[in-house]
Image (cartoon, rainbow, N blue to C red; front, side):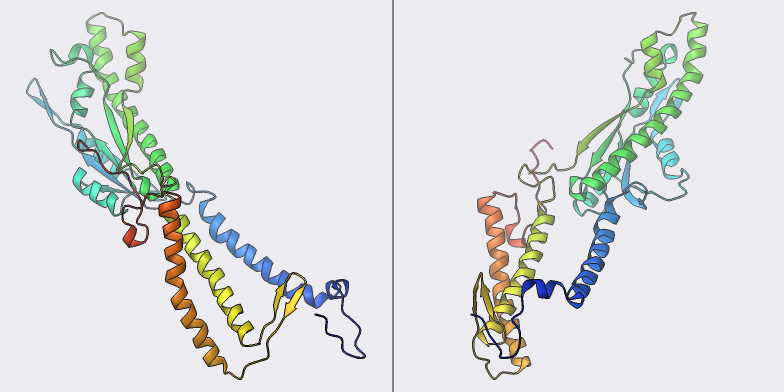
Length: 326
């Protein structure tokens, strides 16, 4: 349908596109939105390490003391004290001394992003590397610390925890190596036995890091990001739904035309106030919002088989159930 007004020339696309006023406002809005979105989303993840402050990580000391020749060797508390009191000018990590049960409970609430655990046999493992001065009958074994990562904290947080765990373990290993060197080398010199090359390599970096996940995520959880994307789709659905409801009501009242390709149609305007129009749009949005959200969740649950152990809570963060032994 084409409307012709006598004395007024017919408008064309070229005529519209040559008008500067038509370009000014959309261009300004798109530039402003693009800058804000870039700063908000990309700025927060472009340099996770450089922008890291107060990363909450639990430190758990389960080390058991070892008695050798009437002396008590207990390295766990010394390591914890050294880690928690180490100077950090930018305060990148916030160490929290907790028990293993407390750390797991905090990770379940996403209050801490990981836990560095000093196992019960750490002191005995270090003593087993002292060679001639090691307790009689103690077989040598490499001491280790365990890093329990929390996959529900997100991939960026998990990577940051892994990096902190590796850096901390390297620092602990260097200090243990210096201590071992002060005891092992004189003992080998007294026994007139050269230190083997393999043993030198082990003594140079004695402590290893073992990493595992706290309550591993399921296979249909999108590496823990399914809840985020469901929220994103719900937001997008609400945005699109609001636009459809607004356009449909305005078209039914005759205040907006409908375009379907080359076809154009419009109704006669209805006598209604803007307040009543707003009420109609609000009621339709309230009624249709649960319908849209339910359809999205049902599609994710039954079509895509997304892990949703708490479906009634609208997509709690998914996880794989623990085994009876874990």
